[in-house]
Length: 325
Image (cartoon, rainbow, N blue to C red; front, side):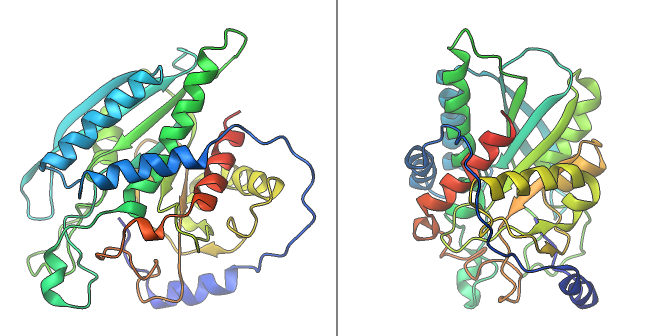
């Protein structure tokens, strides 16, 4: 994920952003969502250890996700394939797709997060520590945790015969964080991030589903999180960006979902937008006070449970649930 932005791009987009002002929040019905449950889902993933593709923890996590989604009432499938990594070697990819609600294959909603974790801590200041895998509590597990709780709520709704749930697919992408490490000295390859979503978009032409829009969750658990409007999301899915941020404001979360617009990020949504032509919005944590533009602990050993807050999970979960009602 995530190429660093060019200085001129940052300067331009800083002038593009606007400050968020507090307004009176009208009364609105809040959707059912348990942040304590989402937090437990995040913690369970971290307990497995780094979920690096090719490791036991990664396989354990995939099985856990499949079994958990099936218990919640989803129809679950696995999507397997091979993609080329940053060294030009074949890397197995295992996406997990859960289907909820209507079986109509037209105009479904796509919710997504990645479940793999970074094989290296390549943003560590100490060189020796850069080769250690990360826990990925926020970068990976937080988005998965929120969507597992969304899945639990959808499963409850499915048991209500009076409920009319539209078709919703939850996809946990693999190999999002296997992109070229900063210490790599070989020839730079293109498109080494987000391999799972690239596989999914490539195989979509053989499937019958169509999607109205998608929401991607990435790094959505930190206590100090802010979610500006990411550039590609605005470019390709402007109407849905406005819908999501307006919903957040109605629910009282405008301090998290800020009106500022930010630089482009190559994340799973980029390929969903550009290759699958599905408007997809990336809800992702920025931090302009760091050199990377992300939280100071991004891709370091500090991406652990201390950077997960129940209140942030609650906000993101409620917004997603309200948008897909």
